[in-house]
Image 1: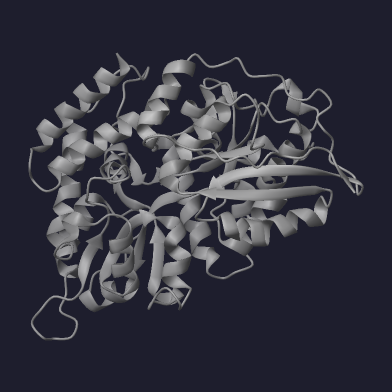
Image 2: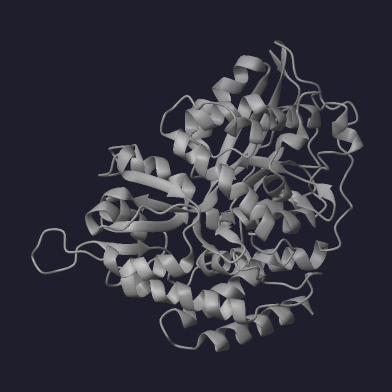
Length: 457
Protein backbone atom coordinates (compact mmCIF):
# COMPACT_ATOMS: atom_id res chain seq x y z
CA UNK A 1 0.00 0.00 0.00
CA UNK A 2 1.27 3.48 -0.88
CA UNK A 3 0.73 6.76 0.88
CA UNK A 4 0.09 10.14 -0.68
CA UNK A 5 2.89 11.50 1.48
CA UNK A 6 4.88 10.47 4.49
CA UNK A 7 5.45 12.88 7.34
CA UNK A 8 8.65 13.57 9.14
CA UNK A 9 8.07 12.99 12.85
CA UNK A 10 10.46 15.70 13.86
CA UNK A 11 10.06 17.16 17.29
CA UNK A 12 9.69 20.84 18.00
CA UNK A 13 11.68 22.17 20.91
CA UNK A 14 10.37 25.28 22.59
CA UNK A 15 12.88 27.70 24.03
CA UNK A 16 11.70 29.87 26.89
CA UNK A 17 8.16 30.52 28.07
CA UNK A 18 5.09 30.78 25.91
CA UNK A 19 4.62 34.51 26.37
CA UNK A 20 8.22 35.41 25.60
CA UNK A 21 8.33 33.17 22.54
CA UNK A 22 5.03 34.45 21.23
CA UNK A 23 6.23 38.03 21.57
CA UNK A 24 9.31 37.28 19.49
CA UNK A 25 7.22 35.59 16.81
CA UNK A 26 4.78 38.47 16.65
CA UNK A 27 7.59 40.95 16.24
CA UNK A 28 8.61 39.16 13.07
CA UNK A 29 5.21 38.44 11.55
CA UNK A 30 2.61 40.86 12.87
CA UNK A 31 2.05 42.19 9.37
CA UNK A 32 0.19 39.00 8.42
CA UNK A 33 -0.15 37.65 4.90
CA UNK A 34 2.67 35.97 3.07
CA UNK A 35 1.14 32.50 3.29
CA UNK A 36 2.41 29.91 0.86
CA UNK A 37 -0.02 28.71 -1.78
CA UNK A 38 -1.38 25.26 -0.84
CA UNK A 39 -1.33 22.28 -3.15
CA UNK A 40 -3.13 23.24 -6.37
CA UNK A 41 -4.92 19.90 -6.72
CA UNK A 42 -5.89 19.76 -3.05
CA UNK A 43 -4.28 16.38 -2.52
CA UNK A 44 -7.57 14.50 -2.89
CA UNK A 45 -9.23 12.31 -0.29
CA UNK A 46 -7.10 9.23 -0.78
CA UNK A 47 -7.84 5.76 -2.10
CA UNK A 48 -7.61 2.27 -0.64
CA UNK A 49 -4.14 1.96 -2.18
CA UNK A 50 -2.93 5.50 -1.55
CA UNK A 51 -4.19 6.86 1.74
CA UNK A 52 -3.89 10.41 3.02
CA UNK A 53 -2.13 11.17 6.30
CA UNK A 54 -3.44 14.08 8.38
CA UNK A 55 -1.86 15.33 11.57
CA UNK A 56 -3.71 17.57 14.04
CA UNK A 57 -2.36 19.60 16.98
CA UNK A 58 -4.81 19.88 19.88
CA UNK A 59 -4.94 20.39 23.63
CA UNK A 60 -3.96 17.29 25.60
CA UNK A 61 -7.14 17.53 27.69
CA UNK A 62 -9.12 15.87 24.89
CA UNK A 63 -6.42 14.44 22.57
CA UNK A 64 -6.85 10.81 23.63
CA UNK A 65 -10.65 11.11 23.57
CA UNK A 66 -10.53 12.31 19.98
CA UNK A 67 -8.05 9.66 18.88
CA UNK A 68 -10.00 6.83 20.51
CA UNK A 69 -13.59 7.89 19.78
CA UNK A 70 -13.85 10.72 17.26
CA UNK A 71 -11.33 9.54 14.66
CA UNK A 72 -12.89 6.05 14.30
CA UNK A 73 -16.25 7.75 13.73
CA UNK A 74 -14.75 9.95 11.00
CA UNK A 75 -13.18 6.87 9.39
CA UNK A 76 -16.65 5.41 8.81
CA UNK A 77 -17.26 8.18 6.27
CA UNK A 78 -13.67 8.68 5.07
CA UNK A 79 -11.76 5.39 5.38
CA UNK A 80 -8.91 6.56 3.17
CA UNK A 81 -7.83 9.42 5.44
CA UNK A 82 -5.65 8.40 8.38
CA UNK A 83 -5.43 10.89 11.24
CA UNK A 84 -2.94 11.30 14.06
CA UNK A 85 -3.87 13.52 17.02
CA UNK A 86 -1.00 15.13 18.95
CA UNK A 87 -1.86 16.66 22.33
CA UNK A 88 0.09 19.44 24.02
CA UNK A 89 -0.40 21.04 27.48
CA UNK A 90 -2.42 24.25 27.42
CA UNK A 91 0.42 26.44 28.67
CA UNK A 92 2.60 25.30 25.76
CA UNK A 93 -0.01 25.19 23.04
CA UNK A 94 -0.07 28.79 21.84
CA UNK A 95 3.71 28.98 21.48
CA UNK A 96 3.92 25.62 19.72
CA UNK A 97 1.12 26.57 17.33
CA UNK A 98 2.80 29.89 16.55
CA UNK A 99 6.01 28.02 15.74
CA UNK A 100 4.11 25.60 13.54
CA UNK A 101 2.44 28.35 11.53
CA UNK A 102 5.72 30.18 10.97
CA UNK A 103 7.68 27.08 9.94
CA UNK A 104 8.67 26.64 6.31
CA UNK A 105 6.87 23.29 6.06
CA UNK A 106 3.73 21.95 7.70
CA UNK A 107 4.14 19.38 10.44
CA UNK A 108 0.45 19.72 11.29
CA UNK A 109 -2.32 20.13 8.73
CA UNK A 110 -4.88 21.34 11.26
CA UNK A 111 -4.49 23.40 14.45
CA UNK A 112 -6.76 24.57 17.24
CA UNK A 113 -7.14 28.14 18.53
CA UNK A 114 -8.42 29.04 21.97
CA UNK A 115 -10.97 31.84 21.99
CA UNK A 116 -8.58 34.79 22.08
CA UNK A 117 -5.75 33.24 20.02
CA UNK A 118 -7.21 33.57 16.52
CA UNK A 119 -5.92 37.11 15.80
CA UNK A 120 -2.43 36.17 16.95
CA UNK A 121 -2.34 32.96 14.90
CA UNK A 122 -3.88 34.65 11.86
CA UNK A 123 -1.21 37.37 11.97
CA UNK A 124 1.40 34.77 10.98
CA UNK A 125 -0.21 34.26 7.58
CA UNK A 126 -0.20 30.56 8.37
CA UNK A 127 -3.97 29.91 8.38
CA UNK A 128 -6.16 29.42 5.32
CA UNK A 129 -9.23 31.53 4.62
CA UNK A 130 -11.96 28.95 5.19
CA UNK A 131 -14.44 30.92 3.09
CA UNK A 132 -11.97 31.84 0.37
CA UNK A 133 -11.80 30.66 -3.23
CA UNK A 134 -9.35 27.79 -2.60
CA UNK A 135 -11.50 25.93 -0.07
CA UNK A 136 -14.84 26.96 -1.55
CA UNK A 137 -14.48 24.29 -4.26
CA UNK A 138 -14.43 21.59 -1.55
CA UNK A 139 -17.11 23.08 0.71
CA UNK A 140 -20.25 20.96 0.99
CA UNK A 141 -23.47 22.59 -0.17
CA UNK A 142 -25.17 21.75 3.13
CA UNK A 143 -22.40 23.01 5.43
CA UNK A 144 -24.61 26.01 6.35
CA UNK A 145 -22.43 28.78 7.75
CA UNK A 146 -25.50 30.74 8.83
CA UNK A 147 -26.51 27.99 11.25
CA UNK A 148 -23.69 28.88 13.65
CA UNK A 149 -24.50 31.31 16.44
CA UNK A 150 -22.78 34.53 15.27
CA UNK A 151 -20.90 34.94 18.55
CA UNK A 152 -19.49 31.42 18.25
CA UNK A 153 -18.41 31.81 14.63
CA UNK A 154 -16.81 35.18 15.40
CA UNK A 155 -14.24 33.49 17.63
CA UNK A 156 -12.50 32.17 14.50
CA UNK A 157 -12.75 35.40 12.51
CA UNK A 158 -10.22 38.21 12.34
CA UNK A 159 -10.07 41.34 10.22
CA UNK A 160 -12.93 40.17 8.02
CA UNK A 161 -11.55 36.69 7.28
CA UNK A 162 -12.81 33.37 8.67
CA UNK A 163 -9.66 31.51 9.73
CA UNK A 164 -11.27 28.88 11.97
CA UNK A 165 -14.65 27.41 12.94
CA UNK A 166 -16.07 26.33 16.32
CA UNK A 167 -14.98 22.78 17.14
CA UNK A 168 -15.30 22.65 20.95
CA UNK A 169 -17.43 25.40 22.43
CA UNK A 170 -17.50 26.39 26.06
CA UNK A 171 -19.22 29.16 28.00
CA UNK A 172 -18.72 30.63 31.46
CA UNK A 173 -21.89 29.66 33.33
CA UNK A 174 -23.39 29.35 36.81
CA UNK A 175 -23.88 25.85 38.21
CA UNK A 176 -26.45 25.60 40.99
CA UNK A 177 -26.77 23.10 43.85
CA UNK A 178 -30.55 23.01 44.15
CA UNK A 179 -30.42 21.06 47.42
CA UNK A 180 -28.49 23.84 49.17
CA UNK A 181 -30.94 26.45 47.89
CA UNK A 182 -33.83 24.40 49.23
CA UNK A 183 -32.22 23.80 52.64
CA UNK A 184 -31.57 27.55 52.93
CA UNK A 185 -35.13 28.42 51.94
CA UNK A 186 -33.88 30.58 49.06
CA UNK A 187 -35.81 30.55 45.74
CA UNK A 188 -34.02 28.72 42.95
CA UNK A 189 -32.33 31.18 40.58
CA UNK A 190 -33.51 31.90 37.04
CA UNK A 191 -31.78 33.79 34.19
CA UNK A 192 -33.67 36.89 35.38
CA UNK A 193 -31.88 36.89 38.75
CA UNK A 194 -29.92 40.15 39.09
CA UNK A 195 -26.61 40.70 40.82
CA UNK A 196 -28.30 42.82 43.49
CA UNK A 197 -30.71 39.98 44.24
CA UNK A 198 -27.95 37.38 44.21
CA UNK A 199 -25.78 39.33 46.65
CA UNK A 200 -28.77 39.91 48.94
CA UNK A 201 -29.56 36.17 49.03
CA UNK A 202 -25.97 34.91 49.23
CA UNK A 203 -25.46 35.21 53.03
CA UNK A 204 -28.44 32.88 53.57
CA UNK A 205 -26.68 30.25 51.45
CA UNK A 206 -23.83 30.01 53.97
CA UNK A 207 -25.07 27.14 56.15
CA UNK A 208 -24.29 24.74 58.99
CA UNK A 209 -25.72 21.55 57.56
CA UNK A 210 -24.71 19.09 60.28
CA UNK A 211 -25.63 21.33 63.23
CA UNK A 212 -22.20 21.35 64.86
CA UNK A 213 -22.08 25.14 65.02
CA UNK A 214 -19.64 25.48 62.12
CA UNK A 215 -20.44 26.47 58.56
CA UNK A 216 -19.93 23.62 56.11
CA UNK A 217 -21.68 24.96 52.99
CA UNK A 218 -21.14 28.31 51.28
CA UNK A 219 -22.77 30.48 48.64
CA UNK A 220 -20.16 30.53 45.90
CA UNK A 221 -16.87 29.41 44.48
CA UNK A 222 -14.95 30.70 41.47
CA UNK A 223 -11.57 32.06 40.33
CA UNK A 224 -9.95 34.49 42.76
CA UNK A 225 -6.19 33.98 42.40
CA UNK A 226 -3.98 35.72 39.83
CA UNK A 227 -4.70 33.76 36.64
CA UNK A 228 -5.42 34.58 33.02
CA UNK A 229 -9.03 33.43 33.38
CA UNK A 230 -9.81 35.16 36.69
CA UNK A 231 -10.66 38.50 34.99
CA UNK A 232 -13.37 36.78 32.95
CA UNK A 233 -15.51 36.75 36.10
CA UNK A 234 -15.62 40.49 36.67
CA UNK A 235 -15.50 41.13 32.92
CA UNK A 236 -18.74 39.17 32.55
CA UNK A 237 -20.30 41.23 35.34
CA UNK A 238 -19.12 44.42 33.60
CA UNK A 239 -20.29 43.29 30.14
CA UNK A 240 -23.78 42.57 31.49
CA UNK A 241 -23.90 46.25 32.47
CA UNK A 242 -22.73 47.37 29.02
CA UNK A 243 -19.04 47.95 29.79
CA UNK A 244 -16.08 46.91 27.63
CA UNK A 245 -12.32 46.53 28.11
CA UNK A 246 -11.26 48.43 24.97
CA UNK A 247 -12.61 51.46 23.13
CA UNK A 248 -14.63 51.06 19.94
CA UNK A 249 -11.62 50.84 17.61
CA UNK A 250 -9.56 48.62 19.95
CA UNK A 251 -6.76 51.17 20.29
CA UNK A 252 -6.88 51.92 24.04
CA UNK A 253 -8.22 50.74 27.37
CA UNK A 254 -11.76 51.89 28.13
CA UNK A 255 -12.30 50.61 31.66
CA UNK A 256 -14.26 52.96 33.89
CA UNK A 257 -16.77 53.04 36.74
CA UNK A 258 -18.53 49.91 35.49
CA UNK A 259 -15.22 48.02 35.77
CA UNK A 260 -14.70 49.33 39.31
CA UNK A 261 -18.17 48.14 40.31
CA UNK A 262 -17.66 44.74 38.66
CA UNK A 263 -14.33 44.22 40.42
CA UNK A 264 -15.90 45.08 43.76
CA UNK A 265 -18.71 42.56 43.18
CA UNK A 266 -16.12 39.91 42.34
CA UNK A 267 -14.26 40.70 45.57
CA UNK A 268 -17.49 40.64 47.64
CA UNK A 269 -17.99 37.02 46.64
CA UNK A 270 -15.15 36.14 49.01
CA UNK A 271 -17.40 37.14 51.93
CA UNK A 272 -19.70 34.20 51.18
CA UNK A 273 -17.07 31.75 49.91
CA UNK A 274 -15.21 29.12 51.97
CA UNK A 275 -12.17 30.12 54.04
CA UNK A 276 -9.05 30.25 51.88
CA UNK A 277 -10.96 30.82 48.64
CA UNK A 278 -8.77 33.83 47.86
CA UNK A 279 -6.21 31.33 46.53
CA UNK A 280 -8.71 29.41 44.39
CA UNK A 281 -8.13 28.93 40.69
CA UNK A 282 -10.07 26.34 38.63
CA UNK A 283 -9.82 23.00 40.42
CA UNK A 284 -10.50 24.07 44.03
CA UNK A 285 -14.02 25.51 43.56
CA UNK A 286 -14.91 22.70 41.17
CA UNK A 287 -14.00 20.06 43.75
CA UNK A 288 -15.87 21.93 46.50
CA UNK A 289 -19.01 22.10 44.35
CA UNK A 290 -18.84 18.40 43.50
CA UNK A 291 -18.58 17.62 47.22
CA UNK A 292 -21.83 19.51 47.86
CA UNK A 293 -20.21 22.45 49.68
CA UNK A 294 -21.17 25.29 47.30
CA UNK A 295 -24.61 26.59 46.35
CA UNK A 296 -23.29 28.19 43.16
CA UNK A 297 -20.20 27.81 41.02
CA UNK A 298 -19.09 30.34 38.39
CA UNK A 299 -16.98 28.35 35.95
CA UNK A 300 -16.84 26.88 32.46
CA UNK A 301 -20.03 25.01 31.67
CA UNK A 302 -18.26 22.00 30.20
CA UNK A 303 -17.73 20.73 33.77
CA UNK A 304 -21.49 20.21 34.17
CA UNK A 305 -21.37 16.59 33.04
CA UNK A 306 -18.67 15.66 35.55
CA UNK A 307 -20.44 17.65 38.27
CA UNK A 308 -23.98 16.35 37.83
CA UNK A 309 -23.84 13.02 36.01
CA UNK A 310 -20.69 10.99 36.56
CA UNK A 311 -20.61 9.29 40.01
CA UNK A 312 -16.87 8.78 39.60
CA UNK A 313 -16.29 12.54 39.84
CA UNK A 314 -19.20 13.98 41.85
CA UNK A 315 -21.35 13.29 44.89
CA UNK A 316 -24.27 15.10 43.24
CA UNK A 317 -26.99 13.84 40.91
CA UNK A 318 -28.59 15.45 37.83
CA UNK A 319 -31.74 16.41 39.73
CA UNK A 320 -29.61 18.35 42.24
CA UNK A 321 -27.60 20.42 39.75
CA UNK A 322 -28.84 23.30 37.61
CA UNK A 323 -27.00 25.24 34.93
CA UNK A 324 -27.75 28.77 33.72
CA UNK A 325 -26.22 32.12 32.86
CA UNK A 326 -24.59 34.28 35.53
CA UNK A 327 -26.75 36.87 37.32
CA UNK A 328 -27.99 39.69 35.11
CA UNK A 329 -26.84 43.27 34.93
CA UNK A 330 -28.69 46.24 33.50
CA UNK A 331 -28.25 44.93 29.94
CA UNK A 332 -29.13 41.28 30.54
CA UNK A 333 -27.72 37.97 31.81
CA UNK A 334 -24.00 37.30 31.96
CA UNK A 335 -21.89 34.70 30.16
CA UNK A 336 -18.46 34.58 28.54
CA UNK A 337 -17.39 32.90 25.32
CA UNK A 338 -14.73 30.19 25.45
CA UNK A 339 -14.68 28.62 21.97
CA UNK A 340 -11.94 26.34 20.66
CA UNK A 341 -11.87 26.91 16.89
CA UNK A 342 -10.22 24.71 14.25
CA UNK A 343 -8.20 26.03 11.31
CA UNK A 344 -6.23 24.66 8.35
CA UNK A 345 -2.47 25.23 8.00
CA UNK A 346 -1.84 27.24 4.83
CA UNK A 347 1.26 25.13 4.12
CA UNK A 348 -0.49 21.76 4.11
CA UNK A 349 -0.10 19.77 0.89
CA UNK A 350 -3.50 18.11 1.41
CA UNK A 351 -5.91 21.03 1.97
CA UNK A 352 -8.89 19.13 0.55
CA UNK A 353 -8.56 16.34 3.11
CA UNK A 354 -7.82 18.80 5.93
CA UNK A 355 -10.85 20.94 5.14
CA UNK A 356 -12.97 17.82 4.72
CA UNK A 357 -12.16 16.75 8.27
CA UNK A 358 -12.84 20.23 9.67
CA UNK A 359 -16.17 20.32 7.85
CA UNK A 360 -17.13 16.85 9.03
CA UNK A 361 -16.44 17.69 12.66
CA UNK A 362 -18.17 21.08 12.62
CA UNK A 363 -21.08 20.17 10.33
CA UNK A 364 -24.59 19.68 11.69
CA UNK A 365 -24.06 15.92 11.71
CA UNK A 366 -20.58 16.10 13.25
CA UNK A 367 -21.54 18.58 15.96
CA UNK A 368 -24.57 16.56 16.98
CA UNK A 369 -22.46 13.40 17.19
CA UNK A 370 -19.81 15.16 19.29
CA UNK A 371 -22.41 16.74 21.58
CA UNK A 372 -24.37 13.54 22.16
CA UNK A 373 -21.31 11.29 22.45
CA UNK A 374 -18.66 13.46 24.09
CA UNK A 375 -20.85 16.08 25.79
CA UNK A 376 -19.28 19.03 23.96
CA UNK A 377 -21.31 22.26 23.93
CA UNK A 378 -22.81 22.99 20.49
CA UNK A 379 -22.31 26.20 18.51
CA UNK A 380 -25.07 25.62 15.95
CA UNK A 381 -28.67 26.72 16.45
CA UNK A 382 -29.93 23.58 14.71
CA UNK A 383 -28.31 21.36 17.35
CA UNK A 384 -30.20 23.13 20.12
CA UNK A 385 -33.42 22.56 18.18
CA UNK A 386 -32.98 18.78 18.38
CA UNK A 387 -33.85 16.48 21.26
CA UNK A 388 -30.57 15.36 22.84
CA UNK A 389 -29.90 11.64 23.05
CA UNK A 390 -28.83 11.97 26.69
CA UNK A 391 -31.32 13.40 29.17
CA UNK A 392 -28.69 15.37 31.10
CA UNK A 393 -28.12 17.56 28.03
CA UNK A 394 -31.66 18.99 28.09
CA UNK A 395 -30.96 21.66 30.76
CA UNK A 396 -27.68 22.44 29.01
CA UNK A 397 -29.51 23.15 25.75
CA UNK A 398 -31.97 25.40 27.59
CA UNK A 399 -29.12 27.36 29.19
CA UNK A 400 -27.25 27.75 25.90
CA UNK A 401 -30.33 29.15 24.19
CA UNK A 402 -30.10 32.03 26.67
CA UNK A 403 -26.30 32.27 26.78
CA UNK A 404 -25.39 32.52 23.08
CA UNK A 405 -27.64 35.55 22.37
CA UNK A 406 -26.49 37.20 25.61
CA UNK A 407 -22.84 36.78 24.63
CA UNK A 408 -23.48 38.36 21.24
CA UNK A 409 -25.50 41.25 22.66
CA UNK A 410 -22.92 42.08 25.33
CA UNK A 411 -19.79 41.24 23.30
CA UNK A 412 -18.83 38.94 26.14
CA UNK A 413 -15.39 37.70 25.12
CA UNK A 414 -11.76 38.53 25.67
CA UNK A 415 -10.34 41.31 23.45
CA UNK A 416 -10.19 40.00 19.87
CA UNK A 417 -6.90 41.57 18.86
CA UNK A 418 -3.37 40.35 18.13
CA UNK A 419 -2.26 41.52 21.58
CA UNK A 420 -5.14 39.76 23.34
CA UNK A 421 -3.01 37.34 25.35
CA UNK A 422 -0.80 40.17 26.61
CA UNK A 423 -3.85 42.27 27.50
CA UNK A 424 -5.24 39.36 29.49
CA UNK A 425 -2.00 39.13 31.45
CA UNK A 426 -2.28 42.83 32.36
CA UNK A 427 -5.83 42.27 33.61
CA UNK A 428 -4.77 39.17 35.53
CA UNK A 429 -1.87 40.92 37.24
CA UNK A 430 -3.95 43.81 38.55
CA UNK A 431 -6.89 41.57 39.44
CA UNK A 432 -4.46 39.49 41.46
CA UNK A 433 -3.43 42.61 43.36
CA UNK A 434 -6.98 43.83 43.94
CA UNK A 435 -8.84 40.69 45.04
CA UNK A 436 -6.77 40.14 48.23
CA UNK A 437 -7.00 43.86 49.03
CA UNK A 438 -3.52 45.08 48.13
CA UNK A 439 -4.87 47.94 45.99
CA UNK A 440 -8.25 49.62 45.47
CA UNK A 441 -10.53 48.86 42.56
CA UNK A 442 -9.93 52.38 41.24
CA UNK A 443 -6.17 51.85 41.30
CA UNK A 444 -6.54 48.46 39.63
CA UNK A 445 -8.60 49.93 36.80
CA UNK A 446 -6.13 52.77 36.27
CA UNK A 447 -3.23 50.33 36.14
CA UNK A 448 -5.13 48.13 33.69
CA UNK A 449 -5.85 51.03 31.35
CA UNK A 450 -2.24 52.23 31.55
CA UNK A 451 -0.89 48.74 30.89
CA UNK A 452 -3.22 48.20 27.94
CA UNK A 453 -2.33 51.59 26.47
CA UNK A 454 1.38 50.76 26.73
CA UNK A 455 0.77 47.54 24.80
CA UNK A 456 -1.30 49.16 22.06
CA UNK A 457 0.53 52.44 21.53
